[in-house]
Length: 301
Image 1 (cartoon, rainbow, N blue to C red):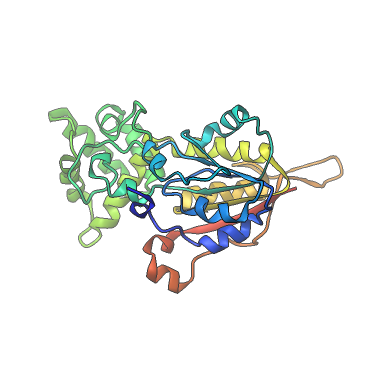
Image 2 (cartoon, rainbow, N blue to C red; image 1 turned 90 degrees about the vertical axis):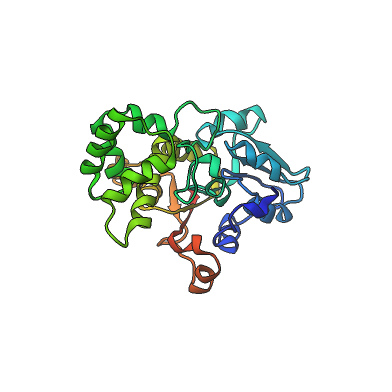
């Protein structure tokens, strides 16, 4: 299952350029996956080193045979802790390609896709305790309403959460098909695929605490980046992009940027690209995943 089972990296050349790689630098690929980004970074290193993080054990199958590379099977929310084990406290660049990999989507047993029959799992780390089935069968109706509405931006989130609570009282959800049967009743005709995707996204984000992990990771990236170090991050939905954009602009997830006694802005990062970079039409035609991608590049002040 070498890297070809994974998605083609989106805007790869822009990511590599954005890192402004130094041959002797220390770099971190926070979302190793199929190794596409890491394998493009490594040729630029001579005495430098690259650390590739991924919480999914399957990613270990794609580790390159290079003395300049170390694979770390861990969630990127534990970035600082694991780097300390390798006596690394500061780095020259960090790359993150957020979201789910095509490999995870295409594995029926993982439960990420509505295209397959399978269990309601959705764990990026298969040893984690919480599954999508547990969310659907045990969460309060109000919690489900919040998850569907905020994480999935589902317009009829309240109605759907009521339906889930009612249905599970008769029979708990135990498979993707059992859940799809409910979703079909509440999806607009002709918009079923989009609706299913929104609901599954919401469940996936909850199961993996993706927003919490992203918030923790952002704070740690600022702490480990050297002055002028680069942060390159790609997001695929508005929740992620909004959080990344705010953090780069203000140094925090919410609220306004802080100022010092003299009124000067206090922020740890500066955008390298004023706006998010998006893929061109040719790349979108070749790689559908690029359609929703937004790339932001920042440097440490």
